[in-house]
Structures are given as structure tokens and as C-alpha cells.
Length: 94
Image (cartoon, rainbow, N blue to C red; front, side, top):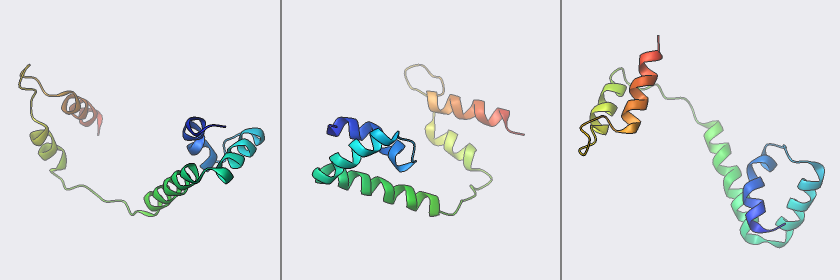
């Protein structure tokens, strides 16, 4: 396997979602490639930290303040795409 293949398979490897053959090939590559091994370890650390994080409840006016900060697209005078998406999502919430 090459580094670019490892890059595409890292998440599947950490999720135990590779075939036995893919797993053997990936592990063989990792034994010889310090760069890919370090990237895999770094990715695993990030995933562990995120999974250990405690949920944070946003303030009651979070959505309103975020939409104000996102503002409008000056060229079109419309909400930017992210603001449009956020408005659509918040309209669906009970």
C-alpha cells in the first residue's frame, strides 16, 4: 500500500471496518512508514478526545446570534448559504 491509500483507509481501520487483507496490508505499510503511523496515532488521539468530551448546551439565543454574525451576502443581499441552511434546520425543530 502507498501513503495515499492509507490516508483513505485510516478511519475504516480505526473503526475495525477493513477486510483482513486490507488490514494486513495497512499494518505492513505502517511498520515501515513513520509518517503514516504518526498520522494514524494523531487521528486516534483526536477521536478519543472528542468521544471523551462532555456535551455543551448552547445558550437560548445562540442561533439568533449566530445568524446575526453570519449576516447577508453583500453581493446578493441574501443570507449566505450557511445562514440559509441554519434557518431551514431551525424551522424544522419543534
